[in-house]
Length: 425
Image 1 (cartoon, helix red, strand yellow):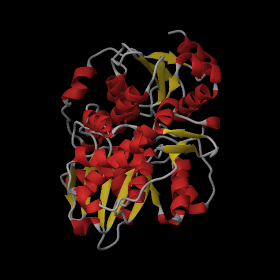
Image 2: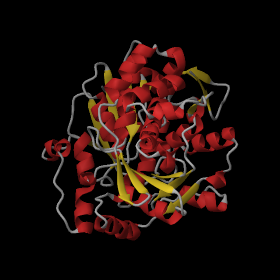
Image 3: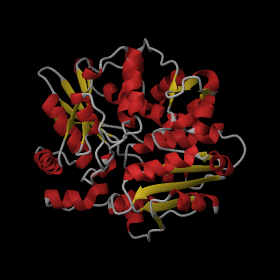
Image 4: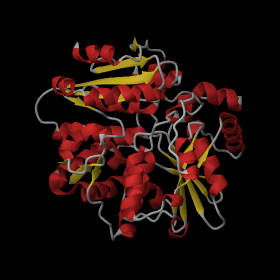
């Protein structure tokens, strides 16, 4: 598999290098030079999730990783389902929260851990990543206990849900967590600064597990095929998919699935009040505002890292950006939508509710709608219980962490302090 740096196309690496390196020169994102067109889509959709995913990832990665090894990596990573639930006539939810940390990030995080363990080579590795909520838990649990791999996770202090925080800030061991006194964009900027520091990168074997890492992104392609596989041929022939979008890795994966040949009519980028992309698509001006805190905190991102990959795909495929629909939803509208969904018999959480609402606004007669549910409602227990006036039982995955003490360090938004922290262990 050959990949190039979108900012500097002359920088080219193979899959193993891209996984180990994370980012390219000048913080450029790596992207596959070739995305093959699969000509056996119906046959693929007839396969079980793991077997189908082995074939999809094999087609993307090529012969660089032996088929037997890649098949084992996928089997070890994808140990949980991604069911499609009918919410109402013609509208379905893809539930991506049945993994060990109850969020869609489990797919990418677990596959990345398998990939890095396979291609790592010798020497120390330090995973440095920023999270707006769910990435932290998925990465922490995927890498917990792996030898010679240290993980440092930055998150905005006070801006993720208490249960999200408990899920990854109570592990200890090779997992260190740092609450930064700033917003997610600042955390993400600190990660980028670290990657720009060549001396630091070499000293600690720096890598990242954000969706900037290509292994995470490719893993997420697989659940779009799993969604289509659970719909009838007539339903998937006119399929519209709404993706709750923060850093835009999830949408990028869906667009790669479409490039491979999955029959998706169009995508909808659904955001909260951090609406840089909807405003850009409407007016043609990239004007990020200051990030604001919302109920859907995992989408509280004003400068989405993966947007260059989205534009690269549209350019390469000859698609017009006008084909990408979008919409932004306020907190008040999110609450209203959660109550409406609950009245219809479907319990959701803020991120999924946003995707559902924008989908409903966009869907045309004769189309089938699918929206992504990226986290279990119990991860947002306080807000969902308040909005719906109900009590949510805690799944075991959350309950066992809820009473444990937080092990996080607290730090100001200061790269010098972070650099010293990374070097001290």
